[in-house]
Length: 144
Image (cartoon, rainbow, N blue to C red; front, side, top):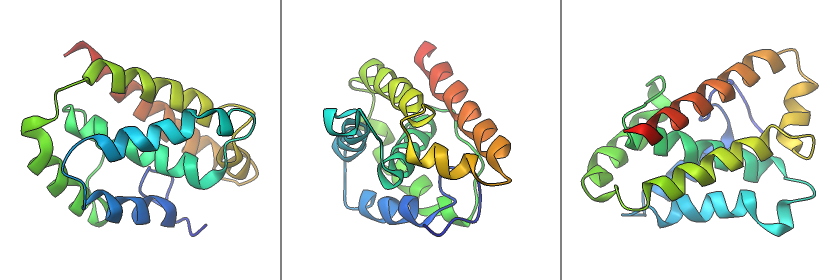
């Protein structure tokens, strides 16, 4: 996996996922991504691509619900998508936030390849802080 930053869109898997997001006009693609992270097939071991895509999906939800992370060149298209979809994206908010919280728990667990890869790097603490910050933002959006 090509990785250049610890944030949700700092890797090839997430940017490929974000390109596919552009073809979606609702929250189905995001929910499907979260379902992949939480599927029984991923329960014993969550592969890195699914985890990276899951973090990207959660970041999009946080942006959609008014808790955006940093904006940069990698998020430009995502932010445009959020602006376009935001008017009709309030349905099932609580369910998607709950799935997001469970997905982050799984991504940070001992059964996550992405966590293992980061743990073996010198940037693990920065990555962990980034994921924890995303978890706080998605949790904060539940109360609004």
